[in-house]
Length: 161
Image (cartoon, rainbow, N blue to C red; front, side):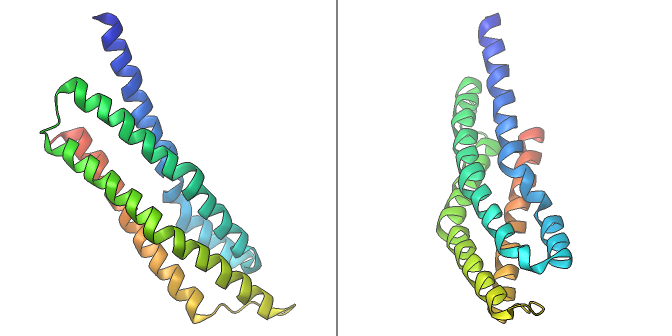
């Protein structure tokens, strides 16, 4: 019994760690974007590449681990009928779908548009296009919604409504 409890606790810790690693950086994106935009707008395409790499190499694999660990935890607790488990699974599916079908493509396009805008500026000051600004707003709004879903999911996991 002690080994089973200890294993459950390890998996719970791994589940929480996966959430922190997968989504923690996303809460700093507005600070990064604001700071780089003011300090060196020419660096924005590189930042967009880094954020896209985080999405592909950290968020998506982390999300897979969150689901795997969550399946084990829900099974051990026999909690599949609990709202917080169903909510968490639904949010994981939504985030995975939005990351894969919507954000990934928009991030790639944003990189291309930002590269184009920086190149068009030559040695002069960079003025980003309306297309760039629109993509930043749309990606930012969807990202903020994803962060809100993560926060609400954490709240539900803790209070277990």
